[in-house]
Image (cartoon, rainbow, N blue to C red; front, top):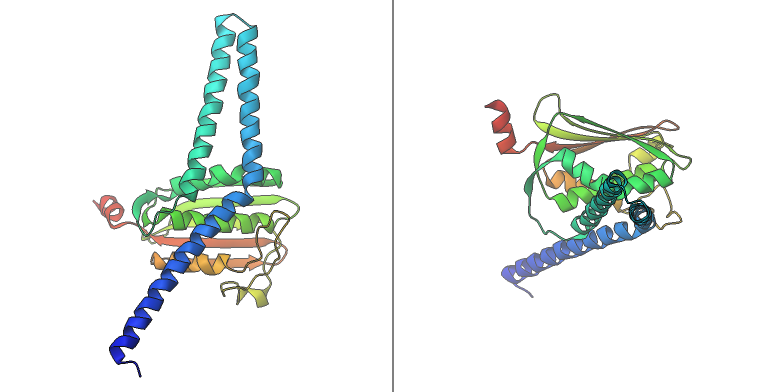
Length: 261
């Protein structure tokens, strides 16, 4: 019969393996999310290339300085957009382990929106973003980006015929937390399902034509990530009117000190 020490070693080994598997699952989900958005990202790159080609042709056809300067400006702008999109994809897909950094929540949201804006447009979802205050938090940016991606894709799927997505970044009323509010005008969640939505493998939907949704892992993962940051995840929903998720994350100690100084 194994000794107490041997049993403890086995338990420790199993816990380590579980953490490693969770990290692998997270990375797989991240890469799958990029793959699911590949159609809209490819569409955006095609628009950028079309802009570059058309203004390059215009610059070659017209020899006057004003037209050529306009062409160069548009080509430069398109190139910067492509670089930003590429940087966003690489940053999102890259594994960053457990590292946490002091980050502006508004910038984290903006970096994710680079990847999903075209997907929202293609699915007739209009976006309104409100930045209220300047909350700075200590975050594992990779994990928080995945949470936001899950939330935004869920919201988009809840609006099958299009709708409005409202994203708000703000400081909580008590000044202790940064908040990201994600509100959609979609189908809403039934009261019976609301009690189970954070349970692993529970899902209210099946995968769509792009393979998004239906695993039941998304919201369970989201809550785990937020709670690992000492934060909270709240949800309110009305059937037929929409759903609101509020992510609450503690402000960084340094940021809080600067605010009170």
